Image (cartoon, rainbow, N blue to C red; front, side, top):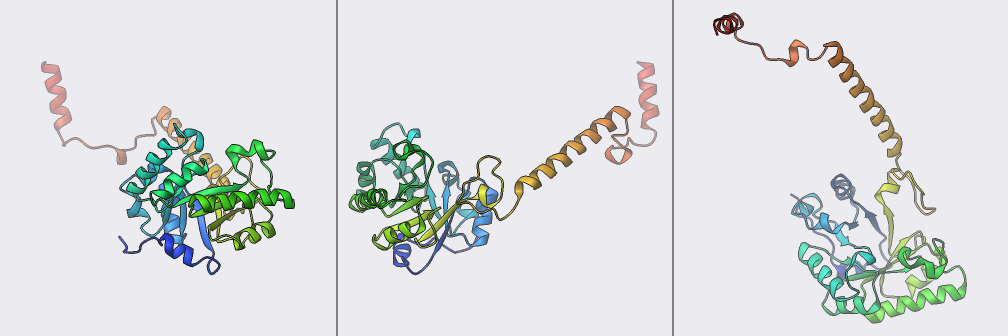
Length: 268
């Protein structure tokens, strides 16, 4: 195992305005291993993956950010705080939390680096008109900026800023000490974030406007599935025709033992 380690929160904050970080959402061990090998610096990961002893063997240098959907938590503050403690014990470098400012403050007061969410927030987007860009007008942008300032007051470490005009997001990023992670908000924040399934072209449903497809895994999976079906069909046909198994797939009895066995059967 390599001796490389993830950056610290202090390292990341010191790089604000100096370095663009790459962040991926990964959900499989193959994706995590590929992110490590590719030098991806930050990864959003499922909590259960982080809690596996295998995690740091696979990704020793990834800054790990587990997240849990807000409505999966049993309570707005205490349950979220217990979950955050569990994640830190498991080796999280920060936690994603889209709960209330009160909850973020409770976590921050305990020294837990928290990443919040502004702009298009999927679980509460009914308040901003659904799944669409936020901050296209000055008034809307100011509402986002006010939330950013409230996150500052709550002690957050960073924010995901989702689907906002890049020029607006850039202005906000320049006016906050928080680590700003762009998802569909341009390249002038502190990091850029995509889901691995979009990068790999695995998404068969709606592909977000901000996503860039770098490989077409869906077509490769279709090709492999066709090959899988063909192989299974050939196997079935070989079984039906007794073409399988061939001598190469079978063991042989000791010479002469078949005859002895038949004699024993006859005598019995």
